[in-house]
Length: 230
Image (cartoon, rainbow, N blue to C red; front, side, top):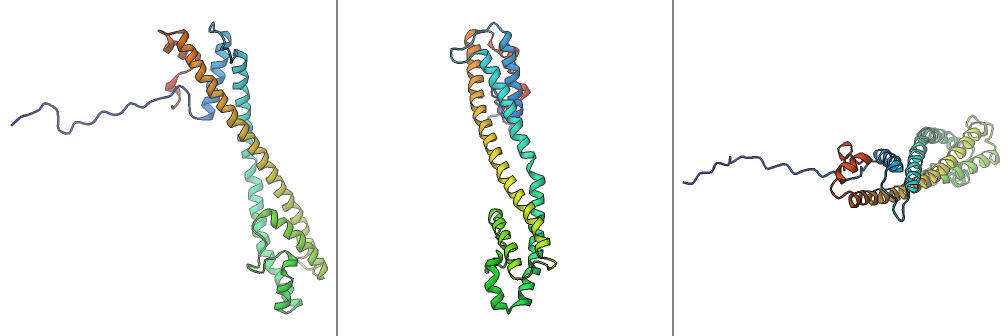
């Protein structure tokens, strides 16, 4: 019977992991772009027809600023989000007392007919879940408390007015922040696309101008693949 010197259970060779010339993460990309752009300022390698040395440095600096701004705008949201959640829970609990006031003043069928005027859904007996609609419902609630002689109760105007004002301000702030963050993220994404295009063009530029030593030159410029995942 034929034999072989190759072990039957020989492990298959591990495939080589390819590392690209540019990192995937935003932080590493920003750091690389600044390093490369600053080195190119002093290098003898000439500019590209469509990309000057100053342009690349400006792109790298702008991307770092936009990346930081987008990240920071996200950090501002959790505190106000937590406060909105807390007020939502508080409103749900306090609303039970308002409904009891109506039951005390009217029979249930009559009281139920007044619920929409108080901003309360007759299907679920709650305030709207969407916060913009909830702000509108709270305004109706305050008006109806006064109209039905309930403003002086424990859960009357004194209770609802300051909470309504805070809630409305937080909802508006949340909407503004979301819009601003969306704009900052959009600017960052567009800047990243342009920056990656510029860096890839520079890589080819280096390879074309240093056909035999381009690997060493890439490292000199800062394109060190072992320092980031490709």
